Amino acid sequence: MKVNAFILTILVGLFFFIGFFVPKFFKKKDQLILFTTGFIFVLLFFLMGFDLIPEIIDSFQSLEIKNFIFFFLVSFGLGFLLLKLFDFFIPEHHHDHKEKDDNRKEHELHLFHIGFITSISLIIHNMLEGISIYITGLNDFKVGFIMALSVGFHNLPLGMEMMMSLEAKKKSSKTKAILFILLAFSSSFGAFLLLLIGKELNKMINGLLLSMTLGMLVYIVFLEILPEIKTNFKVKEIKYGLGFGLVFSILLSLF
Image 1 (tube, helix red, strand yellow):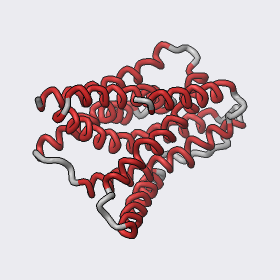
Image 2 (cartoon, rainbow, N blue to C red; image 1 turned 90 degrees about the vertical axis):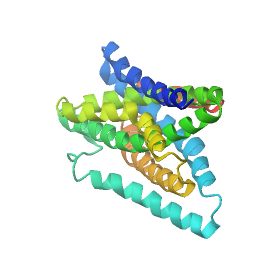
Image 3 (cartoon, helix red, strand yellow; image 1 turned 180 degrees about the vertical axis):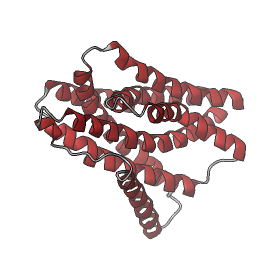
Image 4 (cartoon, rainbow, N blue to C red; image 1 turned 30 degrees about the vertical axis):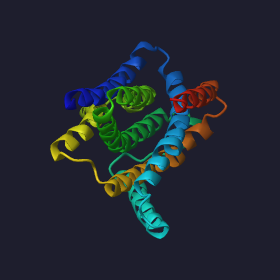
């Protein structure tokens, strides 16, 4: 039973692998980057509102409202500031680069930056999701399987975006390879840690980690991806991505 539940988390990671290789079949990669930027903006927005926030509330439901707000804000702020700290280790980037045709290198660095910090936050988030899928699969394999498919379909476009963003910078192949492996197996890492511990993750710790992840995603959505959307909003690929992301997110919310 434990093996079957663990296999479900591997299934989730396979969707990331599929997403990684999809861009290889597209010749017009610039248009695909713009499309996936709009798509991922909406998808992450829905992920925060319909997945993360309800999970955080559920994890902290035993706390009084004052304690809830305190622990949430501290963890949220830590996640937000953690990604800000990553800026010191990643090349400088600006959001007005697309207005200058001769500054393509700057644009590529910014795309790599988005891909890098998004990967870090998603690794933490997927580890927690892997734990949830594993526990659900232990109790009811059918429900766990449906949950794994739902999360997997979220990961498919995320994998595409990560590939397109990280591939924008031709170098740093080792960094990209490590991030791809961690992303693809992050759900299984979470389940494996729980398997080693031998008991369910404390809800308080789960809530703290989810709040930190939310802070990371807010940083990414509003300070990294949104400026890209504003700069290229008149481009049709961005609009298509936003529209398709909205439809796709609504469909996923029905599961």
